[in-house]
Image 1 (cartoon, rainbow, N blue to C red):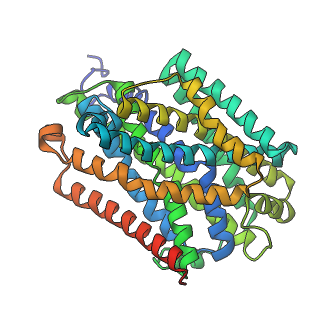
Image 2 (cartoon, rainbow, N blue to C red; image 1 turned 180 degrees about the vertical axis):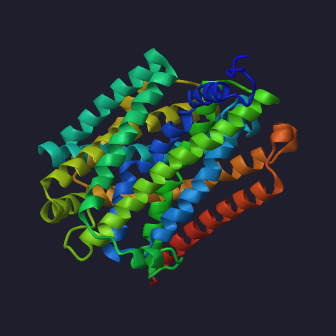
Length: 419
């Protein structure tokens, strides 16, 4: 009798099941691009260069929250067959729906601003191009990436984005091999604390760059479009299990990149003049770690800008469709949303400051996406047996409360000028 009996315990069957499961991965890696966009670079380098290892805890906490939040978003799309913006569009009255869209559109504009500026800075660092020209090129290349999604489907788009994520990871983490990170100070940075109002501003900026509202809106649509509405039963349970692996794996990578950037700045750029800007950090990296590391950093920044601006544009399109019940072609939206970023570059606003402030705007917009998500995924009538378990609901509300509290503290300290 053959020993290759195809039973559930058979190695052949397990390998085949594993390969089939692997082909279902991908939507979370697209959403994860939002967690390694140029806004992260500005916020993390600024935090590390000015305050060393102090704010590592913000990144660790934010990444842990992001894993839960992105899973809930994907689950909503799989169970209901509708995205979070579509659910909001169905439940809100006309006036409230339009007001909610204006808030979400401001968030989308802040997202696009960060991503286009990041690509422009990268092209300036790599090739000496003027920032305006670099922003224009970033916008054009992002149109090409969006064309891939439109013509060749989501799976091909996922492969392109995953490839860019790999470039981002290598580009941003190469420098760690050439610097000495203090393990003791890094561990001390896991203790939650602030040092004045500027650290609260930076923490909110880092939070806005890590827990991204447009990724919360988009992931529900990505999961739905990739897998369809799974309903209830064995297929849904399989997809939810794979989604947990998808989210965990992608955000472990993204979180590692963010923490790596802060560690690099804290260990190699602390106290170096001008390192609170991306250009200054690049110059310091080139001076202390060599031109090769600086080039890799620039390539990672460029890949980050190109990938994230494409994903951000897709998110904005889904938000408009869900809340206004209208959809315009992605390329047309890309052309329209490119204008504010080009204006900022043309009038000479400090690009790093614009990046950090854009992340603060994103942080302020997170509760508008997060609170409805927690409420919907905890709704027995909407989610049925897949509604959040009590512990999941508690953790999700804790995340929402922490984020909201940090934003309130940010506004108070900024307005009062204390600290």
